Image (tube, rainbow, N blue to C red; front, top):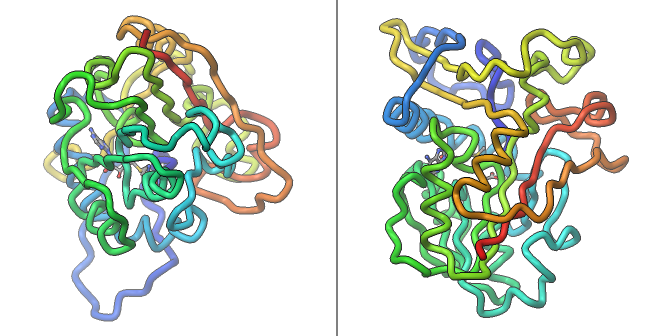
Length: 287
Ligand SMILES: C[S@@+](CC[C@H](N)C(=O)[O-])C[C@H]1O[C@@H](n2cnc3c(N)ncnc32)[C@H](O)[C@@H]1O
């Protein structure tokens, strides 16, 4: 969950290398166009290389079998955005961009039948390591390897949608694989955050760019090849994407920062979370 924009150049302090390896040059962080194929290729590589660090850094906050929607810590057990937990029993649920499949594990514990899909093989190896008896599928969310009408519900906690160049490709695919009456709930970085530096401290509170600038955030190597990409959509863009893909938007949840949460996650912090929204959760129905 949560993303990396603005974090280029920061070194993780969670692990010290045991063997000194030659340092790979830091990627350059920039804003430039990046298409569907380039974005998928870059992000598959990035998540494969960084899955271990992601799970070390955030695994404790996520919990092995909790369903957390974002760095605010909103938990599906209380939020019930997919419907009441007791109604999940026997339901076929697709989790997109599942990472180590923490959410799917919680869904399975409610009696649902989850399928956890992710672009990154390494993320899914972490799902295997933690365990669970549900399918793991390594695929790009823009081309879902499932028959029409295979699922009752679909969900995603910061998976796939912040990273794809054309979110309508994903949304149309989800619409296709959902049964009529099915629900899609997904969380992304709140679009307003793109107007601010992605910093947890006071420097992250002053507008530094245009909210309306949709140019993707790209980290690229010395040859100019993208190694990480995030795509910005305004709130209105996201609503139009949902509606144009055949869904009805029934709620847009902006979780408030709770007093119990003293954790920072990249640019998400109690300081900023108390002043501006950090996560947007779209609750959509396929009629
Ligand atoms: C921020 S992580 C979120 C993982 C998990 N939902 C969580 O809360 O920890 C984003 C995940 O989306 C996956 N992802 C990125 N682009 C994707 C795509 N096009 N299709 C499927 N998964 C994708 C990444 O591999 C990564 O595991």
